Amino acid sequence: MTAQNRLRIALIQMHVEAGHPEANFRKLETLLQEAVSGEVKPQLIMLPEMWNTGYALEEIRTLADRNGERTKKMLSAFAREHGVQVHCGSIAESREDGVYNTSYFFNGQGEVEADYSKIHLFRLMNEEKHLLAGNVTGRLKVSEVDSGMMICYDIRFPELARKLALEGAKLLFVPAQWPNPRLHHWRTLLMARAIENQMFVIACNRCGTSGTSSFFGHSLIIDPWGEVVAEAGEMETILHAEIDLDLVDEVRSRIPVFEDRRPALY
Ligand SMILES: NC(=O)CCC(=O)C(=O)O
Image (cartoon, protein in one colour):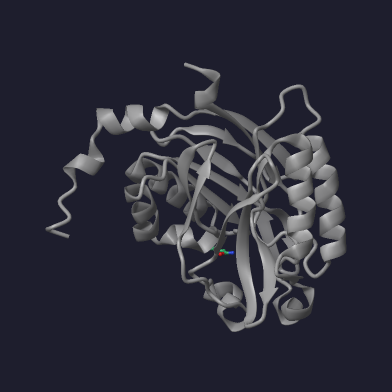
């Protein structure tokens, strides 16, 4: 196995102060430095969903990052300085027509390689009242490997993960703010998306509390067999793991699910 076929990942499972972008940007700067200061440097860093504002939806129009400019400036500079790829999780991003829940992916030169705005808005947290839904699926290349992007609630839609897998995705990125009491759903759905599509699922949740909601963390990296490569606990932490990218082809050749599909029947 060559070094090129492996990917070192760090997931920043952080507490988010709802309604306080300043505090969240400051906190993130510290955690990003921490993520690259160990002996083994990650090649990719990922953040949770809506870490800039949290779910301060009543004030989201004023709090959201206009066109993602502040986020892009900070993360692009960081990615370039450290030669590391950064999946920004997602941010509340304001555009002319409203606020979106948007992911950006920066390559190691600090360029925006891909973006994706959440396409399924989560009614239980009133997203549909304050946010606009994206209309395009999220595809990207990570270390030259075809990959897909989802955000949180999106994982309840297996058709989306399957579409990304059929288009070639071998890695699926899922930033989240997934609260209690649905830890069982979080783990099971992520596991299912990994097993049925024989892909790595890389999922970064937030932790801590906001108002009456509490977030259990449990950021996860799951391999294409459905085995847990790494899982965080409930506290703020940086979860480091290394994955073997060749495992996707190995699993797909042992159980040829994609060849055995009968799409004409369903
Ligand atoms: N932020 C979200 O999309 C939360 C999704 C969630 O909690 C769920 O159960 O689905």
